[in-house]
Length: 83
Image (cartoon, rainbow, N blue to C red; front, side, top):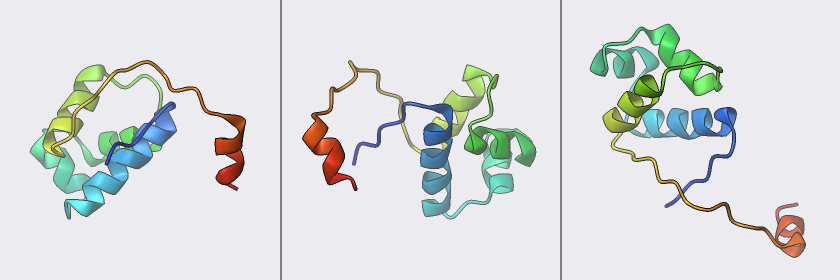
């Protein structure tokens, strides 16, 4: 299922869910991609100024890929359905 992230925090939440679904701790994911647990924590928190290389390594380790496409335009009725 596609998940949409428009902010760093949303992307971090997606990565956190994927890590947990994979049965990995932050430390375990960090070991896979040779990064400290604290770096994984910052990535999942949506901390600014992380290197793109860090994001790409985490996506790869979680068997995810980054897809770039034009942003969808929501209909106001669709937004009301969320609440």
